[in-house]
Image (tube, rainbow, N blue to C red):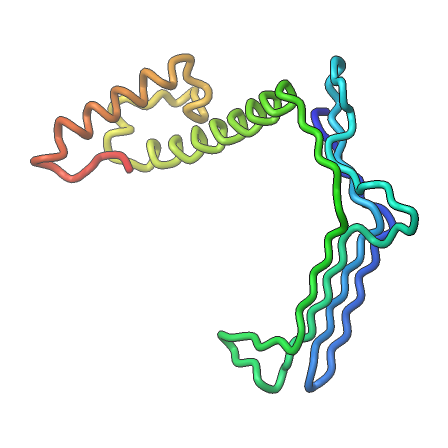
Length: 163
């Protein structure tokens, strides 16, 4: 577990009439924590302590159903309130979060590329039936470089093999 987000005292209200739609959301407290063993500041985001606390986040939207069209919503009123928050991020935590997002993005792109790779006509020549995605290949970056080189070589005379 890398991060956790806690939201307490939440309240969501929705009402709909022929003329208006009301949506109100209130979150009493929002707090984000990091779970690194060597964290100096385990609390990343929290409301600033005050004498008379209010909900940390509030949203109120009143939609005019009479003036709204199918492709355009008209609002009578929109209000957003965010109380003052304390944000404390350590460099190590930023690197850990970046590494997590990079890993997720890389897996997502590998899956997407494998679908494109498998659907192309050239996949019959160089695909391996026992591999389910590019992530299963030990040298993914090498394969990507080869595909880019092939596309570059044939881009002047043939349509692109891989998108």
